[in-house]
Structure formats: structure tokens, C-alpha cells
Amino acid sequence: MEFRTRAIHVGQEPDPTSGAVVPPVHLASTFVLPAAEGPADYDYARTGSPTRHAFEAVAASLDGGARALAFASGMAATHCVSLLLKPGDHLVTGTDIYGGSWRLFNNVLTEQGVAITAVDTSDLEAVRAAIRPETRMLWIEPIGNPLMSVTDVAGCVAIARAAGVLLVADNTLATPVLCRPLELGADIVMHSATKYIGGHSDLLGGLLVARDDELGDRLHWLQNATGGVMGPLESFLCCRGVKTLELRVLAQSATAARLATWLQQQPRVCRVHYPGLSDQPGHDLARQQFHGGFGGMVSFEIAGDVAAARRVVESTKIFRLAVSLGAVESLIELPAVMSHGAYAPEARQAVGITDGLIRLSVGLEAAVDLEADLASALATLGD
Ligand SMILES: *Cc1c(COP(=O)(O)O)cnc(C)c1O
Image (cartoon, helix red, strand yellow):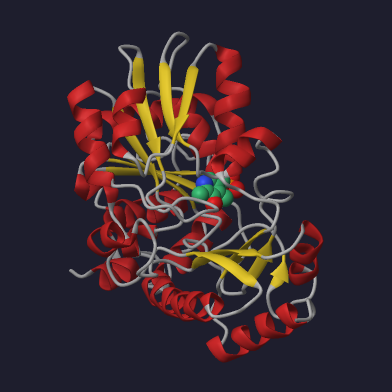
């Protein structure tokens, strides 16, 4: 079945007791067992629960994996993956990555004896050069954040395989609609389900999808041992969210592409970052790697000082000034002081997250309204 059909039907069998078309939300924390040690589908909800399983089933199908696991947040999912590493191991990550992942890697894992090297993963030579004998994991974002750099998933798979290193892709920005890293050979996909999968700014959630059962079972063991699981209400909302995922992501990508082109023509905008623009360094790769669009995230730099960028983000009316991304409503923010405040100032500069960088998460509003909103915010800067 096609992606859109699976998004609506996998794991969503009508309730056998009532015939309800939408599976119920099972809130139970514990389940009656047929015998003290007998096998049962469910025993305790940390280990597994029916509503979470419904979401995990559809999530595994959409990313093309053997097993999916739903977590309380994206960071809980990332933390669970990081437990595959031991003191003395080495992790290679991108520089253009989610600020919270950067904090976990550089401020928490380092304390636990894991060495970290951050490189520009859009440069395969840099990735190859960063691999050491102790390297155990390569962490990439197919679409980077906040600079929207494009990382060659298949190229990184080849490097990781040759070195016997696990490849994990944070696919939050690309979503399984545009890119399915497991099909390109990645070992694990991670998502913040808080973003496009939930899609409505009304839940926190995370997801891991494993390529094979062995890795899936190991991650499930770690998830059960540490306990950061997704609750039943969030699982229900994620099941609902994925039903419209493809429609939303394609529409958001189309609007983002239009706004990116328009922003390039604005005199106060000195640089636009969007993989769909033909002048971008990652554009040719993006055309091969992403299907149906280039995502709903755009960032751009304003000529002038930080105050000018602040004025713009504080002047929009439809774009709300807020972190997060991927929902139906459009958001605007300043990465240097908001989403990427966890980077040390020097690291931020080195990576290219300038003080005047503005990030947009494009929602489902009409493109003309969003364009007019940005035009009036830019107009507050004068000529
Ligand atoms: C939000 C986000 C995360 C973290 O997810 P939470 O649900 O906020 O814990 C990780 N990676 C990316 C790319 C994100 O946007």
C-alpha cells in the first residue's frame, strides 16, 4: 500500500469490542494476566500498551523499519539511543543540529566518558576524517537545523558501514514523507514526534525506528529499563497526526519554497537557507534525496544588527514568536538566543548561526497571508 494509505490504516484496526472505527485510548497502567508466569500481550504499561503499540505500528511502517518505539519526548528517544554508547566510545555528530541534541551530546555524554567530534556532515570528507577506531556512532540530520544544510544519507551509510559504526538519522525536519533513511541503509531513525508527526503543537513525543529486530529489541530493552515512554493520550494524538502527515508536509513544503524564493528578492534579506533553492550548496543532493518537496523550514539572515532581527521576529502577526516547528501554525524565532542557545557563543559563530539569523517554521496558512505578514515585518526596518 502507498504511504498515505498506510498512514491511515496500519495499526488502526477497529475496536473489536465496539466496532469503533477509531481505536480507543487505553489508559490502564496494568493488565490482568492469565497465569502468574503465563505469556500475555501486555502486563505493565511501561513495557507496552495498546495505544502506544498502535502508533508504533504505523510509525514503523511509514519509516520502513522493523520496529518503532515511542517516547515521552524526542530527547528521551535520543537519550535512549545514546545508552548504546559506553565510556571510551566516540560519537561523530553534525554541527548544524538540534540545540537540545547538541546539549545532550556535549554536556551530558561527555560527562559520562563518551568523546564527541562535531563536523559539518554535509561534507563527506570531513565525516570520514572524523572516524576513529573507537567511533561507535554517527549522528546526522538529513536536513540540518537551523541552517538547513543537506547531509548525504547514503554517503554517510557507506562511511559508517565501512567503519562498523551505527548510523542514526534525526529525521524530524525531513519526515518520512520526504526522506526514509532506513531505506538508504541507516540503522536507526529518530524523530521528535512533537513536530510534524503530532503536527498541532499539542503534545511532546519522540520516536525511534530500528532497521532490524535485533536493534529494535535492544532499544526496547533500554526503553523499558529507563522508562521514558510515550503516554496513551499522546499516542492517540500521534495516530491522528500521522493520518494527515503527507498532506501537511507537502503543503508546508510548497509554501516554504514560495516564501524562500520571495525572501531572496527582499532588499533587507542578505541570505536565505532553503534546500529547494537552486543556488544552495546542497540543492542537487536534495533533489535526489528528498521526494515531494524540500521541507517546511526556512531560515534567513537580515542585513543590520541583532536589533533588526529582533524587530522582525517581534513584528509578525501570523508567524508566532516561539520555538518548536512542524505544526499547522507558522512560527518565527531567533536561533542564536532561542532554539540554539545551548551552543556556546564561539561554537555558534564557528557553525555559522549568526545573531541575525531568523528561522521560520511554515504552517498551513495561505501563502499570500504569510508573505504579507513577513513583508510588513520587514517594512518596520525602513529602507
Ligand atoms: C525538537 C527536536 C528534537 C527534540 O525533541 P523534543 O520532542 O523537543 O524532546 C530533536 N531533534 C530535532 C530536529 C528537533 O526539532
